[in-house]
Length: 367
Ligand code: ADP
Image 1: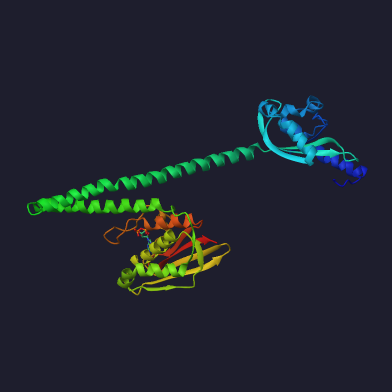
Image 2: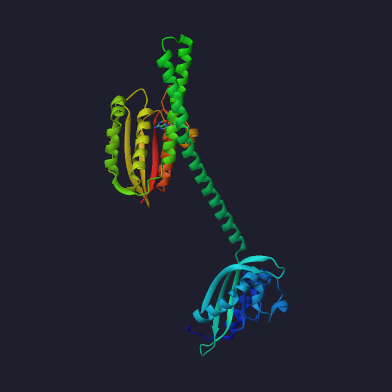
């Protein structure tokens, strides 16, 4: 039972004035049948009725035909009666027939014997919030659909394109094998160009397929990042030896990650750090990790060629490369993969770099 306070006349007056002067909320009372007993300026503003048009009419006239057929007003009054109050959102009608999205609280009013004698009704016009929410939802759904379509397309295209490339390579092999000695030198040069392009196309399509497959790992696993780092070091043994890099790693956490993808992330960042080293001095690369609130912040720092600030964002795009392929090999997929992997883990990735001095690739992993 709600504790009742006896208000002084002044407090009662203040309370009436509060309701009278409130024009953001429709505040009025109903009798037990739902007839409207009074009407404040907020109600007039939201619903469009003057007090003389509406007092003693039934509140059911605010409800849509559909809600009336489903007995929404009656069930709200019954619920307020049995539970003390009820909150409901839905489309309601204004005097001019237009609709607004209402957030409504109906509260049972009791007499001194705790008998329900009527209801208080507070309504807020939430139309603009509702419309914004619906637009956001629609936009999100559209985006998710488009994203799925795109992923499907990438997967199918990259998979199916491998077949004609295989054919091209087989026929090139056949020509070399059957007519190799008879080919004139010009033709041999042209065929080598075709072979080179076919090989690159094959690598690109395979790379794209790998990109489209990221995220199919469903289960996360607790792994020691230090152990993963050591594994990747083994995989990159010849790149480490060839570059003469001094590689170090500070203390690392144990994390719940998509293991195959996370390993790929470390591998891509490390191989870039080795590849884009300067021609003078000893290349130095360090992986470190710190904590920032909810996130682990990893940093892979190198003292390589660096990246001009104007490229800091675009290097994470698919196929984006900053150098001719005869200077540094690559497909421009490594960092796009890294971005996708970090985002699959709920984190973000960015670079801080000074041309000629080195780069620090940062990524966060929540948890
Ligand atoms: P790829 O290495 O195949 O070219 P990535 O997507 O891995 O493609 O990298 C995109 C571009 O970003 C590279 O071509 C290079 O210009 C630049 N980049 C990446 N990592 C580094 C790094 N550690 N130092 C300097 N430049 C880098």
